Image (cartoon, rainbow, N blue to C red; front, side, top):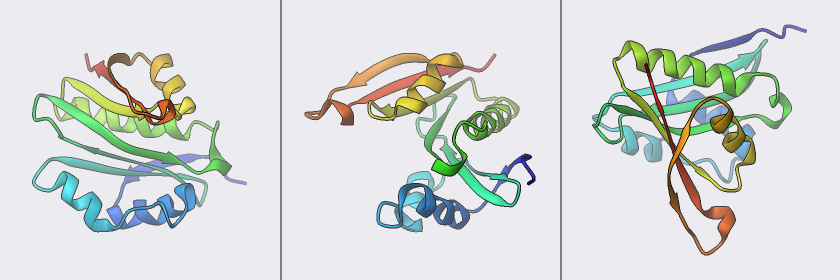
Length: 148
């Protein structure tokens, strides 16, 4: 079995196809939902494959216009977790952000997403804000990382 991780830029349609496997078809939003978010803004859409298998995705865009690139959505198929997929997607996005002269990466994560929270703290992201929700698992934690 080919265990090489390949990451590349992709279309939003490819992300949606992979996202249906990661989140389930009923939870994945339609193309228009994505396109409206990053309309008229720089955006980066990436996918990861492990061998020939679609394994994950990340969607980034210039949400704030403040020199930061926002990592909006990431997903890794449960079958491919703990194999370096998220690390590869993030490294790819950070490299492009640096090349495009962005100064920071920003993201928000639900409190329930323990794997992503662990990744962000392990790889040098700092907590910048907390949005409390009635259900604590739905609360969102904001992170950022300087790109130096």
